[in-house]
Image 1: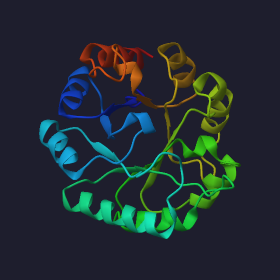
Image 2: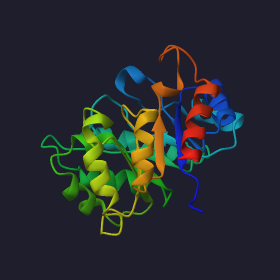
Image 3: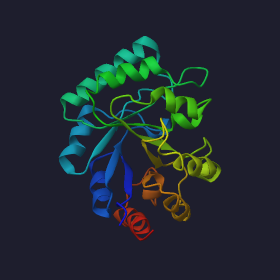
Length: 233
């Protein structure tokens, strides 16, 4: 029997986290400020959620809207925040930085990753804005802790990105393609069967877990509907 697909849910606060865990989430992505597509939560925000649930938490390392690391000053701040979160007990992270040409900002990624002490981390949807996805994957191949790419396959979302996702899933044994594909960004339940059939076993939801929209909380029932769809395949 194949292993259970991973269901990751965005959580903004302890109430979200409790509902997501109750609904069957395997892991949470912790962010604040969804108006900016998710920024680093405060250390107090992390510790509050960590105290509320016992499933793994991946903490966003992103200090401003967009995909720039913010130059040397921004990288210094990111490293400081990462160390502070590590000291508070965070042990999984989410990050991703591009330069103005849409190429991966390797020095920024390497400096931040060095502060994570080998912790597992996800390269987020910056890959969907990259000038060359294949080049990005190969440049990051072998970085300590990189085990996941969060991607819709396209900046426009899974509807447009599905062919790319299916192609990349088929390359999972090639250098740069071993990390798990975590599909998120316009993901709907009707996408699930094709993705599972392609061997994709990571799913990430934000708005789909919130029937009232981003102003409302995560719904345990909505998460449970996704859990059932993934388990029944």
